[in-house]
Image (cartoon, rainbow, N blue to C red; front, side):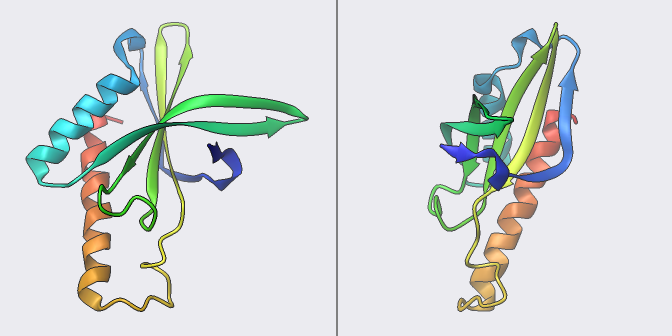
Length: 132
């Protein structure tokens, strides 16, 4: 389970679809997988939940997590949430986790560090296909 206070914003934070009845985690996953394959970017997916608390009220919401298949716990993960208001679907993107590799105390060589940076750059280009 992901704790909401550990999420960081990605910009644009929200995409909205006025006729969002077909927007699901499965449709987001299909689009990202197809685009990533064409771009040659490795991605894997997991479903999880985000837990938040406001004034003592605990809320749990489903989310789709996108991550590098070879680096599940040592790269930053991207989280997608879907919220609905009437027929409109809002998709939010956040990131969570830490990357020991992008820190100032990184012990990897420059080639490995650059590989992770390129991975995140490619992911952000892929997210643009959500037409935010």
